[in-house]
Amino acid sequence: MKAVITVVGKDTVGILAKVSGICAEYKVNIIDVSQTVMDDMFCMIMMADITDSTVDFAAFADRLEQYGKDNRLAIHTMHEEIFNSMHRI
Image 1 (tube, one colour):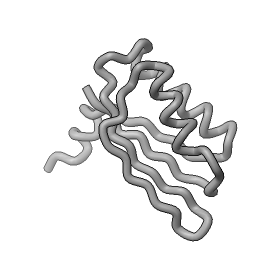
Image 2: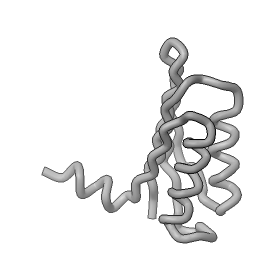
Image 3: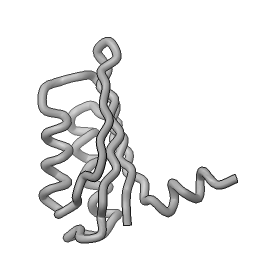
């Protein structure tokens, strides 16, 4: 199973490193990442494989969201099934 992780906020050093570190902590493998900085805004989308995660999806998503709140970032983690359902015609 996969998850889509989005991160948006004011650019600071280490955002990618910290988010990927949280993924590694829970054995979530980052498959692909795209990031850009627009003016001072950091924008990133990650595709992650959650098959071997050591916690359930909700706990993983909550951990990322809390990191975002603590660091003034909007982090949203969406399960692949929900993402696919939202984008079906």
